[in-house]
Amino acid sequence: MRCVLGLDGGGTKTECVLLDEEGRLQAHSRSGPSNPLRVGVDAAIAALQAAAQEALAAGNAERTDVTAMVAGLAGAGRVEMAERMRAELQRCFPGCAVKVCTDLELALVAVGKSLAVVLVAGTGSAAIGRDAAGNVMRAGGLGPGAGDEGSAYDIGRKAVAAAREERERRGAESALGRRILQGLEVSSWEEVQARAREAADEIFPRVFPYVAEEAAAGNATAQGLLREAAAELARLAGGLAERMGLGGMPFALAKAGGLIGRSAYFDAQLDERLRQAAPQAKICLLAVTPAEAAARLALKLAGGAKRAAEKQ
Image (tube, rainbow, N blue to C red; front, top):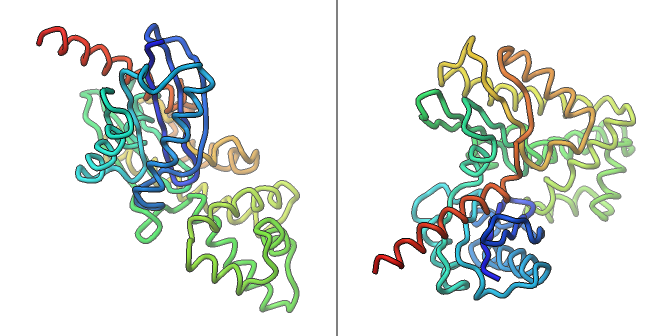
């Protein structure tokens, strides 16, 4: 069975969609993080291969059946990194047409061809937009050292800091602090700090679900953290819309990323602040998943590769 693969890789997970050459969905799979800047090139390639192999097995296909692959990766914004990842994937899938782009580009494809801004809130945070003339602009996506406000990493880092501060002030663990320590399966904040020094990406983003649980239970500290994150993300998306000259103009403002749909409290706060930041926008979700958008791009890539081969 001739087929194509679409991959969407970030700092927490990788998703893969397998389509046959007629565009029919054959399988969907998931693996670990594949942002090469956060986990390294070797680990990113391993995660991409794992997701691809699982999808192929579920779809009763072989690697030799894959005619094209598109991978949209966080951390692949620089040309040299995108090319390195493309070359590694090409080596893993010889004879397959391979394209690597950013996860933001995938998100913009997934929202459709309309005037749009896409807010991506996951391990990191970023926004991308397209104006009426087709011009594309980006904001955020600078990584934890220079930005990522409102992201899972940012929420987790601030939650750990808030819980530690409350522990020192009260001499006892807060409800949020107890939930974080329990969820991370550690006994002390010193252990959290030590593990964060070694691999912060494996600690801080994991804290978000515990903050969400506490917020749902009415915890004021957790709710404050999510309100702050929602405000930061709304400023990111609203600021990009303003830079693009979309003020007073209706456009789609799509939400994407691992934070969306995981906390009713957070989603409500984010929607409220997005309406304030861009009252003319229609807030929505992506029309298709980024991984499926990547697979649709791969179908086009396969068609182009086939036509080029026929001309030789």
